[in-house]
Structure formats: structure tokens, C-alpha cells
Image (cartoon, rainbow, N blue to C red; front, side, top):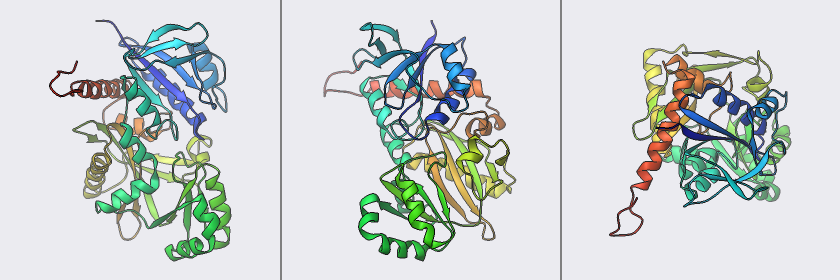
Length: 371
């Protein structure tokens, strides 16, 4: 049996473009080359796909601010029934065929169900949650409302669209005031702490909302609580398992973009988190419950707030394409749980292939067997 051909797709049109490249580099470095042939596909900020060779890819990802440019042949992925064929737009010829895709596209146009829907149409296996789980996992507002409906605790919040803010900022400011200071204002559909502001004085709320609206048309305003930041990784499809929990200890007021990706001393990562046995169990059980409730698959990282004093546990958010950089929690948590990066990447690809086979077994027409 030959090698499985995996396409790693990275970059993209979101504000997390640079982080995506760093994650893709870690995935490419960890993947088992004895089992998988790898095709590197960079998506530039305009949405064009470029086939990159290893040398160009490593040069890009070594840059201080890595970005995909027109450094490789522009390609497109053909829809079904071609199933994974990459065509060169320059030569109008098929130049590769993919068995599976590992999307390392953080944020909108990659983590929100868009690329997942495209890969479903192309009938190709891919790593991670499907269309619904990805879309729900990306939208912090919808995600929190679903969690609330299921009785899962989240911190008090409100969601505001651009139009609502323009036409009713005074009323929204009053509602935000009722939540109590401090507040955190963030884009509803972005990660990596991009566009987040901590509001200590109500007078700075308009500036914080404007900053978040630069990245999204909807923002979330949530109450800031004195809490420990706990994270837990989940792996699996129908029978998901949780890693040991970890704790983020920022050296600033919150775990900012700079602390995550620029300042090497921006935060301390405690793995496993110094929790009691009952606290550890509660985090792991709730992580799996959230993963299942939000229709996730393959992988996700669930982030929690453990309130100081009360010990109450709140779900902050789920990340369906968590970071894979050398300082990212998802691979570190699994390594601490006995699953090293190479094994983790292989398992994620296997889970994607398993889901594709499950879908292919479904009937497409009544009375006719599917192939």
C-alpha cells in the first residue's frame, strides 16, 4: 500500500494569517513522512491558492511576519467526482491528487465551516470538525447561546452587530455597564486574541468596540472575572477523549496576541494544571460534553475560566482548529497525556479519513447502494 497523500492548507484571508503559517510549519515538521506524502498549499490574503515547495515554505515560515505571496504555482482543488485533484491554473493540468486535507486555517474562511463545506463538495477527507461544528465553534455569540441553552455556564455577555452599535450605542453602553466592569470586547468570529480589548473604564468602550469591528461585523462584550485560565484538548470523533488540563498564567492583564505569539515570556504554561482531582475531572468531562454538544469532530481545544474564590467553572470558548505552534497548548497537552506530536498528527488524519468513509456509506438515492 502506498503513502497517503495529505495536503496541508494554511495562510488564508483572516487576521490570523501569520499564526496559521506558524502552525502549518509545526504540522509539516511533525507529520510522519514515512506514512504520508505532503503537499503544501498556501492561501494568500486575496484567497488564491499556491503550491509551495519545501524550500519556499520554510523560507516563508522562518520570517518574523510570515505571509503567503505568489511564490508558488497557483492551483485549484477540483470538485467531485475528481476527488482531491489539484490542477495547475498555469498549465491547466492535474499535478497532484490528495487523499486528505489538513486545514491549518485559523479564523474566518478556514475555521468557520467555509473550507469544510468546500472539502465536502470536493468529497475529500479532512481533519477536524464538519461544517456545522466549525461554524458554531467560530461564532462566539452563537456558541455561548447554545451552551447556555444546554445549562453549561458561561460568563455574562452580550453580542452587538455593527448596525446595532451605530444606531443604539447609548443603550448598548448601558447594557454593558449592567454587566459590570471590567469588560472584554472581542470580535465574535476570530481567535488568537486578535482585536480584543480589556475595558476598565466605560468611557473607553466605544474605542474597544470600534477596534473589534475592524475584524468582524459582530462583537461580543463579556464580563471580566477574576479567574484562572484553564485549557483542555479533545481528540476523537464519536468517542472523544480529553487530555490532561493545562493552565495559562499570563504575565500581563490577559492572554493577548503578543503574549501568545511574540513575547516568549508573555505567559507561563503549566501542564498539567495544578488542580485538585475533582477539578481535573470536572474540566475533562465538561470539555468532552462541550465538544459533543457543538457537533465537533477530530480535534478541539476547550478553554475555561476557573473563578478565584468561588471555584466556579465557566466555559470561555471552543477552538476547532487550535494552534499547533511550538508554544501552542493543544499539542503540548496531548504530549503530556502520552500522545507525542507525530502520533497526534497521524491520529487526526485517521479520524478525518474515518469520517469521510462514514459519509460515503450513506445512501444518496433511496433504494440505491452508495459507493
